[in-house]
Length: 473
Image (cartoon, rainbow, N blue to C red):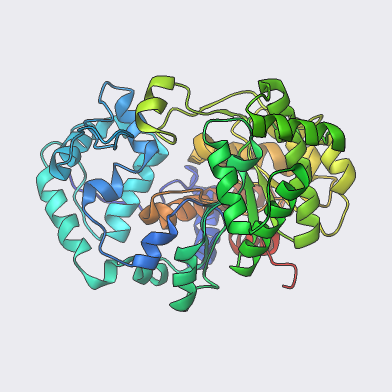
């Protein structure tokens, strides 16, 4: 049977001298509270506070990091129990899904998914058996039994994980009912929504008119014309602020944030309502609305988060059958310097504006993002995200941005996870990588160890708290 033993120095530097310093830096931050300022944990999970269903639906089915690796080796989404949009038959036996995952455990060697999953099994679930074809059934039963324990209810895990603040991501047309239930349970200051307006600002896509009707209903504002549309979006922002939101989240194809003339914006919006908007006009309108969202952030204090550069739903057949977020979102080259110039020229030095920039194109770290963050007071660099959320990706991030932007123009770690149990694993890895990078600076006599320890605490806790602070804080 494969035993699971996590080394206490995992992910720390290999050299003895640097590792010794890194160990001390890491131990100074390991018990700090977790600030989870951007992620995709469903607020209903915490509002319902029910037992997690089973190991497969906890650790495999909803995690596209896991499913995409298996799909790459010929396993189908049907076999993994991922539901089809039309409700047709997929695998429903969680034991079968779990066995399939365990039979392919070797595929995750060297990946961050393996790091997170091992941490979840060993540190969160307190088990010492590694996944594998010979251990699948025993491990399933042990995890399932653990999930029966009262200590593994979602709200209890907030305390066990030492989560001080958790931000969810919510459509602008969400009624925020789950967050209302959390407020009634006394968690309104601890679990907060984040406004995601993409389905409304990307006009002309299938379902946009339905989203628009829902916006009008929730906001109580007539969206028949462009001015009403803007007023309705402001009303939804106000509702999110009242529910505790600290940020907005924008997943645009490009970083373009260039305003249109008011007449052109009105015409494009009217064309979208009539179903006659062209793809080029819709794309220009999306960039215009990114600019308008920045203007609104100056008014209400919500921090903008922008993460462009992903071709969503690369396989149209998979998208048609299973919907979005199934592992088929693929990065493209990103450009920020010209694209953000109109927005940053207008708001980048405005003390009421804050924006956090993310990318999955690390070629722009040193060329564009670090220089932008290194001069515009409103800009902070977001943590390595998605495919770069890995040990080497995080090391490269520090190496590429620190010389130009320093540490204090970054936002601290953002876990961006849908897998609730992976949150402490992701934060732990980030703290280990930062400890290793800072230790190298100490050994090279570029920082004192006291400075490194202080910086590590800032990166882990103070910077995210400041980057996403409410205007009143």
